[in-house]
Structures are given as structure tokens and as C-alpha cells.
Length: 576
Image 1 (tube, rainbow, N blue to C red):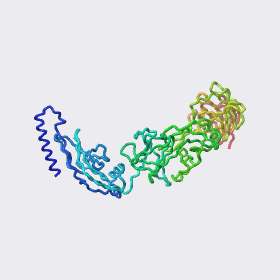
Image 2 (cartoon, rainbow, N blue to C red):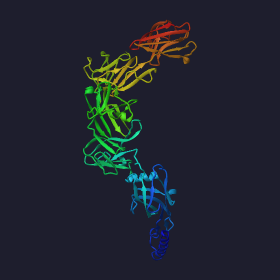
Image 3 (cartoon, rainbow, N blue to C red):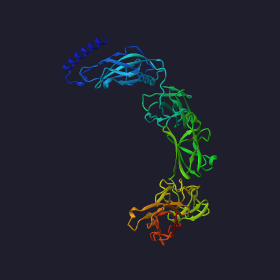
Image 4 (cartoon, rainbow, N blue to C red):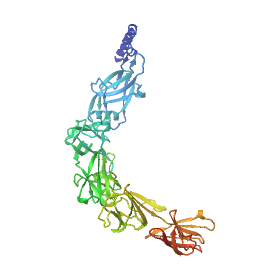
């Protein structure tokens, strides 16, 4: 019967259109044609469909008889679901284009997609959702609908989103859902993702917020009150200004808030040690940061509100990743105190965001260091040298022989009572220990505590207060060995000698008779001999002759001991 009416209407409409063309020649083409609505056929009106959770990929086919453009213009279709009795389908519960890019007269939708749309719209699980489905036809600027009632029974279990965001007038995103703040999804005790999410953020009292599964609509939405989470519920009202840890548990539909008055650094590195507190300032976006003087090395933790129940510690195996001590077991993590080896003023930053809970300690370069009038070098508590000053730059006068675990300190007073300076790395720490000239730079900062020596060597030190730079350097020494008689320089051996404290270099190696030799750090140091044919003698940097003192091929232990200014030295060859 619907089809008979449809085509009767078409005949009448065409007749009127022809008459109008004869009597109103000036009408625009837009008004000279019509779009006759499609006729929805399947599912039939008031049909009941039960969505089977065990077969989520099973589908429902929606079909219809085509719409007709009286001018023959192209038509596209989409299927919409909306609340029962709807006639205006501008904001439907669900919409999908028909097959073949919207040109076919059918659309296929999975059980899972239908159930998700009904879930987002707030229809309860396992219950019958009374809705209207409609086919929407569009041709140019004209739209026509036909609709049917439909009863759909949802899945037995509710959909639980894997992502969660917070947005609203009470939040830091200023109620802009596109910039909603993502919560961090926590693990369970087996290390797998759980349905518990949390976020560290600020709230404004008297305003509201909700949790969303996406940063755009449609999305699952959660409101509620008094710690009870309600799907599609009213927005939650923030009771008090402040920064909070907000936890949401989608397994039992609860939420909880812990007000964070402050996070602080507590432990051995700070003034006062474990009995003190260095608070961090909230920067927004789940980040706290402050400049803190680190006066010692050792372990520390981050503590909330001065309460030992809320401690952030380092995840074992991932030292910059943090975990709340009280949550570690439930998330399958092991933890330990955080370690620090820096000394001086540092920017300590705590980042608690959805991308991870981490911290960083970076040199504070915001305040320049004033150049002292004098600077003294101490080794293991004993003042050994006043450094030479040239403007903002201080240097030591010799190649200072230092041993592993020596403790170096710098002070502006000869008795150690002045300003102290330190670096956050060890002297001798390098990835290229066998290079000719080995050096590294570190940021100089104000701070007590010693600088550890990591490698036996003889060091020069340059300190530039204008650039807050500490530079150390040492030379390796090589025994050059070549056939000078037969012009064999290009085929020379360059034997790396081993440094032995203090200022001594040794090597045991086969040597060839009548070969020339020198002790060289190419090309800064070049030691020749004043008695080149002897197995022992004196060497001079930049002077002397090639040593030619081996008459028979064989292995020799070769030793060179240098003066602390590297101008002279002695050598010895011992047959093995």
C-alpha cells in the first residue's frame, strides 16, 4: 500500500511541476523539482532484535525502496538510529552511510556497533531499547526521511572504555572536550591493563566535570556524586579548589579524590636529609617543579602532603619511572628509593601524566655563578694548589696525578671556609679513554660535596665561571716504533702505553732491532732522548733525538715517567 501511495504522489507532483513550468517561467531550478522519500522496508516496523553478545560480528541489514528525484539528480542514503518517536534526525544516536559509498539501498551494521551506540546513548544492558530507525535520502540540498519503530535488546555486559578523559568547567582544559585531559590507565597485579584510571590535575570549586571515553562526541560519559560513578549521569560538582589525584574504577563504578597540597623531595641529597622537606610547585598539566640545592649524593623519594603513606619511588629496572609505593604490588611493580649523584642547584621536575610517571633533575642555569677572586683545589680534604686566574677562567698549573676514588673539592678560600663549587659527573668518566687527548665538560654549580675521580690519570683542569663550565683533560702516551733506516715511517707501530700512578706510562711489547722510537701524544707531546742509544735516560718534550737502542729483536718492558708539567721525563727499556 505504501508503494501505491508513493507512485500516486509522484504522478501528482510531476503534473504540478509541469503546470508550474508553463505558468511560472522565472522560477529557479531549485524549486522546480522534488525529492520523494524512500520507503523503509527492513527491519519491519516494531520488529524486535536481540543482540547476541557471543556473536558481536553478526550483522543487521537495513534496506529500503529508493527515493526519487523528479529531476533525476543523484541520491545518497544513510541509516540513523534515534530515540523512539523522533522525526528530526539531525543529532541521531547512530548514523552510517549505506553500502557502496552511500548509493545502495541497504546498509549492514554489526551487533557490536549497534550495542556501542546504544551504550553511549545511555540504554541499560540486557534491556529492550525502544528506538526509531530511519533512512535518510539526500539529493543536492533536499533531504527526505522514512522511519520505523524498532526494539533492540542490548548485550548482557556493559562496554568498558579503554581510555578515559576528564573535561568540564572545573578542569584545566576549560571545558574544551577536544583538549580533554587523559587519565593514566593503571596495571593490575599481573602487569596487564586494568579498568582503573587516575589523573593528577586541578579543579575549581563550584564548577563541574565529567569523564569521557573520547575527546569528541559521541562518547561514553560518566558523571555522578559522592564517589559513585553514573554512566550518562549528571556532571560531578567540584567541592574545593585545589590539585587532586582523581581515581576512577570502571569495574565498580566509583571515583575518589585525594587533595595534593604539595609534592616534595625528601632524602639524603637535600639540606636536612631525611628529616627535611623540599616542596615542589605545581605548574599545571600534572607537573610539579622547583629549583633545589642538592648538597649530598644518595637516595631520596617524593612525598605528598608530608605524609609517609604517599611516596613515589623508582621502578626497579627503570630508574626514571615512578610508582606510588602503596600501589606497586597491585600493579605488579617492584620499587626502590631514587638515587642521585648530582651536587649543586638543580631543577627537579615531577611529571605525573597519562604518558607516564617520571622525574628529571637538570642543571639550573637561570642564575649565573659569580666569579670568585681566588679558587683553591683540594684533594681528599688537603689544599694542594691555588688555581691560576685569567678573568673568569681558572686553570691548574700542572698535570695533577689523581687516583680512583680521590675526592676533589673546589673552594674560594684556602681553608675551605668559602663558597664551594661542584659538578654532577666524575672526573675521568668518558666513553673514549684510549684517545690521544681525552676530555669532557660538565656544568659547574654552587654546592658543597666532592667530585669523585673515576680513572687514574694526570689531569689538567680549566674552570670558566662565565659559562659555568668545568673542563678536565688528560693525555695518553704512545710508543712510536718504526724503521727509520729504510724510511718506514708510514708503516710505524703506535703502541698505546698504560698509565700507572703517578705520571708513569708502561708497555711490554716485541721491539725490532735498529728501529727508531719516541714517546708521543700526537701531536701535542713529542719526547726525544738526550742519550738515544742507551736503554735508560732522560727525555725532553719537543727536543732530543729518536731513540735507537735495541740491537736484538725481542720483548721489552718500556717505562716512561714524566714530570708534572710534561716538559721532561725519564725512560727505561728492560728485556723480558
